[in-house]
Length: 160
Image 1 (cartoon, rainbow, N blue to C red):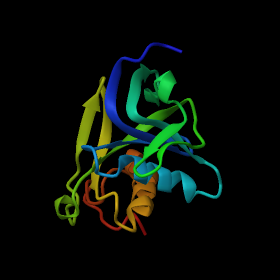
Image 2 (cartoon, rainbow, N blue to C red):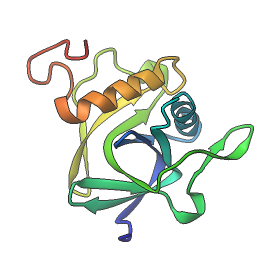
Image 3 (cartoon, rainbow, N blue to C red):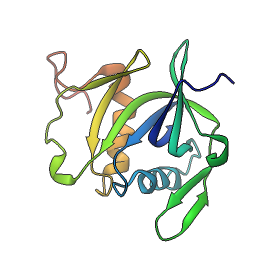
């Protein structure tokens, strides 16, 4: 495996063939949201990539996320400590989710993108502790990397 080009603070989860990078200050729910995403998926397709530190490297297809060896397969859950979760060694990064306070989540998201190591990724804001956070994140990961944000091309209602 090629050496990482960049380490970022966050948590990364692979949902099928795409991964999301969860970012935010301590206490915003990155690890908790990752735990819920993995635990509620009965198909076993949702796996932890990394918790606390995420290694990113460039690949021909975009960015690939992985965990530092010492943290691989582990997530830190408040009140419990380090817990092993089903994991994958690496996954292609397709989305960034900034975890914010509920009042900071826009009612209608303006299209937002961020470029990391030359790769442009869609960025959303979520409140990790909302009851619908896992469903919203799954929907965003299924839709935004390919179709863009609703209304970005002048059309609305592509989520129906």
